Figure 1 (tube, one colour):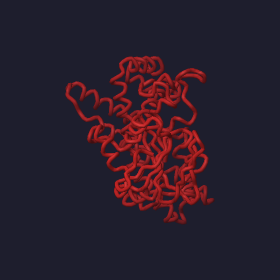
Figure 2 (cartoon, helix red, strand yellow):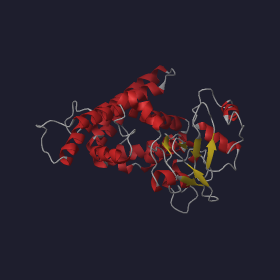
Figure 3 (tube, rainbow, N blue to C red):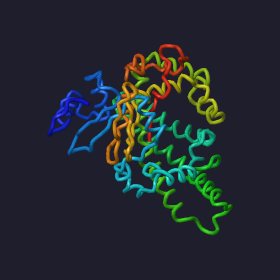
Figure 4 (cartoon, rainbow, N blue to C red):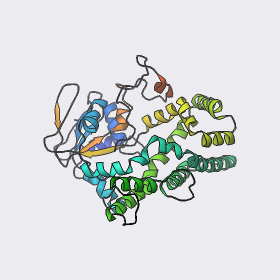
Length: 358
């Protein structure tokens, strides 16, 4: 644990570390800064920010993350549901736990299948083509503009196309698939007898979450990918060469080929590597909760850290995915690491990449 004051806990320490970062830096940068300041701190430790935050157990390594996301899935931290309550009334997959989460995840599973996502590619291509035209028009002005606003619109437009059954002639929407799964689960082939109000409530709340909350992580990721390509011209040249080879040199030709053959996306390994590497450096994050008698074990020395109810467990993916102990040349943007074979220097350690945990 970092130096602790008997009255003020880690508050002064937080202030000292964050004062060296830009004023608008996200708090997720804090644990990685602690790792740099205290190399021997280790992958698991407590932070005391009372009265501004609850007692927190920070987890920053693949082995410790494995314990609470795979080996033993803990309940979610109540603040997650509280934050989303005005939007979804607690009836959404992000807020739910246990059997209730499992039931509704089963109902909504078809929406996340690889086959269904491939069916949606033509719709995504149409929206992305508009986005590209807008970018081109901005580029012609040679003036700086906020990219996040545009990617927000892009993500929202794609989400709307996927979620809502509007102007669709090929694939089913989230609503269509959820309704079909519901009818199948309840051994019914029609909706003549009416739909369970609980199903309607959860489905509507989940749709709101998809549209108004789910788009932000996609929008941010697109920004990060474009930024990393802009500051790495050699990597930008490599990804262009791959696109020219697989999709054709003309953008209109690429859009047509993707719409006709969405499986071509599986033939773009370097593009996939660029996206993964961007999400390594700029991941989304999550928290969870503790439960009675549960402990997290430090893999270095076997020391057990209690994770009782009410304790915030902070899964700090940013710190984990920039730690040189798990990532050679961790601060470099190297898509090639995702193409490396086992035994090579850049080969990705199993379990080290967790760009989004929820």
